[in-house]
Image (cartoon, rainbow, N blue to C red; front, side, top):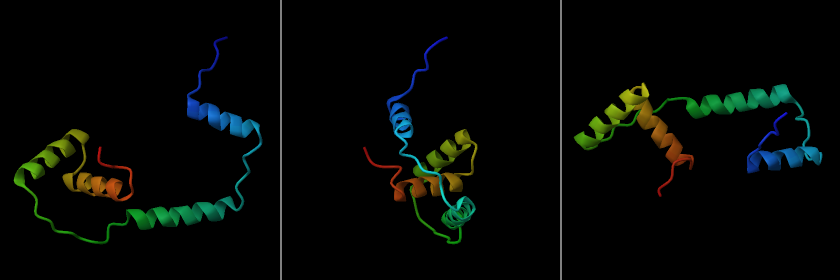
Length: 91
């Protein structure tokens, strides 16, 4: 039988679990409902923004969106969301 190879972060989680550092979540249904409400609020698109950008940038965005298989407005909204949430940062 081959040995399971874990990544460092997986090893850390396993060690934490084996040291009984994990606890069952209380009120799971209420927590799920609460996080579902948060998610709906975060992804609700209830504001319109008009911006002026260079034509070349718009064409490049449209090409990238086409490769991704999504509307270019969705790509723009996704990039903005990732940037404001700290997922997308400058090098």
